Length: 111
Image 1 (cartoon, rainbow, N blue to C red):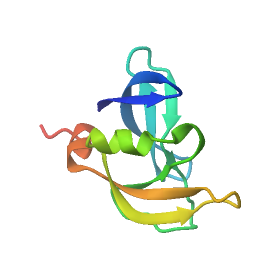
Image 2 (cartoon, helix red, strand yellow):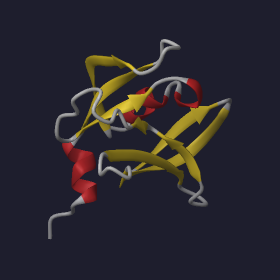
Image 3 (cartoon, helix red, strand yellow):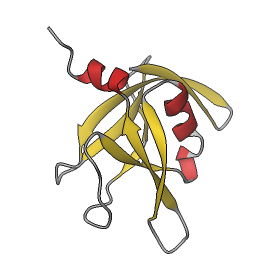
């Protein structure tokens, strides 16, 4: 699903895609719509540290991903929840996000 995201003063035309981490946990990756190069991995893999409900992901909200959560929500790819999880000793936290039915429909089109 395509959307726009501005980071470091540059606007990217992006595509959000679902992949999987090596343990099978869902991963949301962002690629450049024009050349297919990676832009960001929006999600993190909390492993067994926190529960991840079905059709949800944990979003990385720090470093190069600052503002990506808002771009994804504006594009109706995710719905942010109020749930957060402390991820590391630096005080970084991830936000639980629900994948929207609109986005999920793009992954498994009905024939």
